[in-house]
Image (tube, rainbow, N blue to C red; front, top):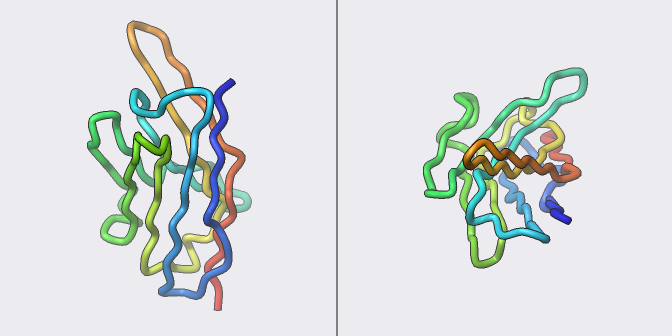
Length: 119
């Protein structure tokens, strides 16, 4: 049974930083593309950042140069370092692991962690 558990969310002032973690159990994340999504109240879930099994990254335009996604396969954990946070970054943040190979696709989600940016 694959589980993803996020942590690190909380309340932070504008301009502050947070680091989210997502630790997997029941599988090894090294073969997965790992994604961070966020979802604000009343809005659709959006992809924030992605890191492939090979280490390539991409980001939503609104977080480029502020957020950094990284992975530590030995710890089975993916991180999202969030700097220069803005009120519009307020959302629930979800970790997602995706594996695709020879027509087989697996996708797993964490339960989410809340990030609130407010003074």
